[in-house]
Length: 129
Image 1 (cartoon, rainbow, N blue to C red):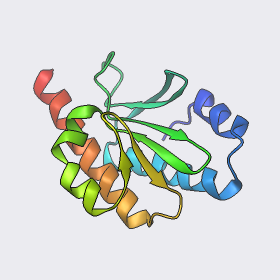
Image 2 (image 1 turned 135 degrees about the horizontal axis):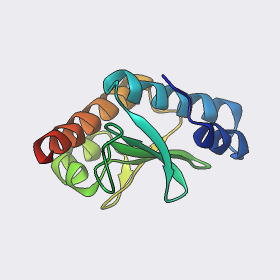
Image 3 (image 1 turned 180 degrees about the vertical axis):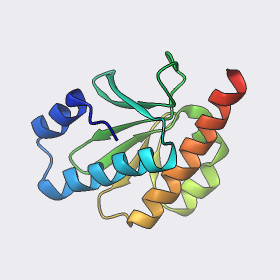
Image 4 (image 1 turned 135 degrees about the vertical axis):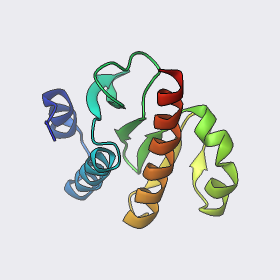
């Protein structure tokens, strides 16, 4: 995986704890495992993960952000709408476009959510190509 200096700088400049940064790094690495052609960029002042170099604008897999109490998980509104029952079952706070994942959430749950979101958005990207 090629490292994106902008995202490395984003992590380094964050006031998040060392453990929170490790949780973020885990999520970031999982994105690349799930979708190997992922391209990282900073967009809207947070890390954005796109399906490939050709993806533009809103054709993304996911945004992630380091927040004080949770990992910001931005999988796009269509994913949240389609998975609202699961998010309620997991007792996660979410809105139209964002999910708050507390840093003490198990990595298995985080991985499952990443897989679902990336496959959902990746499938949409491939259909729209």
